[in-house]
Length: 316
Image (cartoon, rainbow, N blue to C red; front, top):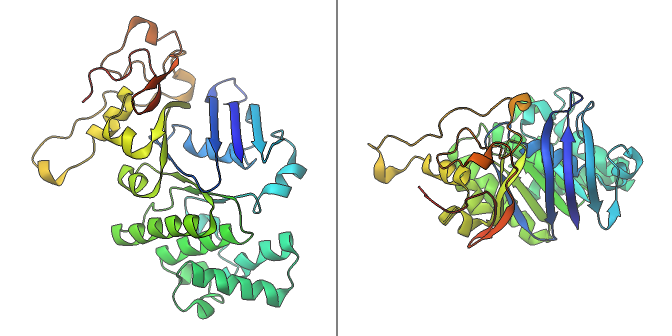
């Protein structure tokens, strides 16, 4: 349905923010994308909807329903945004216009893309509010973002993304800044909507527990590279790449509350300082001489694929 082939995103200075990404999402698939901040998760998603920030150069192919779309072909992207793919952005208060009632915000794409009149768009917005579980939905239509709770604002963004019945919903850190119970309800809602609508879901998060509950498949990113992929349950139970192993080892556990949490040594390098070979070189406990200068091959592992010169060895 939507595929990326050798997608690379560069800054004007030539620094590579996403390197040679290959990815395909099929109808009904739920894909998790995980990694630290700055790993390229959001930029990968923005590439899939033609919203890469100005000043970045995009190379490679983006195919939407078999159509190859150039990064700068805004007319083509407008045909597909909202209808074929839609995105829930990270921060509801930044994504919602504080001067516009939330009902009007959700009704706008219905009028713009589907040609509904004001009354029909408002009725559809009400249906979407009810579908996404917004309490007292009719009253909420006339409220402004600041009058809603964080969980309610997140549901408004979900309703907005669903307005034109997209084939793919991209959720970028949809549970950030929400308490645990609200976050759980939001992830459960996204799964139900994906199932009910046979809609693909791309779930971007640093929360491995949320990803494990929500997705069938997983992609792990570091330094703009996809370093591991496979079925979510298998990758999270038996990771092959040392970066994935480090992420899992650093999770807190109620069973080992007195144990000092392992950490990945060092810090994520700046974009201009990423090594030309394996992006994880310099932080990896089992680094080989070729890791710094030679990009690792993508190899098959028992749980999927990993980009590593020595996958699976020395797991933590």
